[in-house]
Image (cartoon, rainbow, N blue to C red; front, side):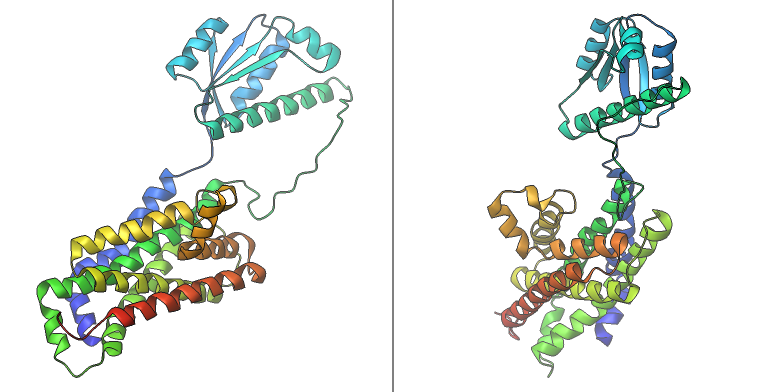
Amino acid sequence: MRKEVLEIIRDPSSIAIAFVLPVFLLLIFGYGVSLDARRIAIAEVVDHPTQLTASFLAELERSPWFRPRRYLSRAEAEQAIMRGDVDAMLWLRSDFTRLTLSSGAAPIQLAVNGVNANQARIIENYINGTWLLWLQQEATGQGVHLAAPVVADVRVWFNPALRSRDYLIPGLIAIIMTLIGALLTALVVAREWERGTMEGIMVTPVSKVEILLGKLVPYFVMGMGGVTLSTLMAVFLFGVPLRGSLLLLLGTTALFLLTALGMGLVISVLTRNQFVAAMVAIVTTFLPAFILSGFLFDIRSMPPIIRVLTHIVAARYYVTILQSLFLAGDVWPVILPNSLGMAILCTFFLSIALLLFRKRLD
């Protein structure tokens, strides 16, 4: 372990992997990945401008979700959608005012660019919400009771601000630490083989268990430091609440980091080359974690065979635990089974690394 610590001090690349890379990736993904749709470009077409049409369009302009653009005709607005200048068209027909005052409903046509299906649904919901809010305000202002068949009393649990960043950042920490943990051990052990220093370790009277522990413990400490830094960024830079126990967060993180480091040890034993080890680590850890962990894509919507495959991805369990600890708190029915899944994978990878590692050069 002392020898490995001296290697870390002399070679700053390991420190960069443990501390600089998580900060860089968290900044890139934290600010670059968002499921929120804001400042949506929308075309407005009004056949017969009146005070009511102006009031409704003013409500759209006050909304943080839209960036309205006025067009003289429907044909011009449709061409703007075709060119990609706007994402939707809102057409207020000539009898808008008459029908609004008489029946509470108005002929509004909303045409949405459906290339991005998720954004199209968001735009539709935003427009419906804005319309109902404006209609209620107009009725209240005129002293008229607006009858509604259903009145929903909505309460949003765990993420009341509906910020996608609060949901994504905990998952990002898991994805980033999957890559960092695997790279830390995969590259440094492969580097020993490339430089020929592994032969010097082989002739010492230490056992293979001691060699693996000497490699594992220093990078485990560095990895925990990287997770701590990422957590501080999540809470103080991105404003993500941490509602769960800090000790529970550290405990589950330690279990996950041992799993990631174990994967890196297996890769390094099999490859013995830094470039190959890096490529294998990215393909076998980062990409499956990004796609199959539930961080960005809902596992329940995947085909059955893919849902089965997600159970061998350690990040799946850690993402669920982090999202629970950050947003909901210490939810034991979530934390315990996912911790058990990580413990099984941790035992598996460390056992495989121990079985594959041999104190010989062939």
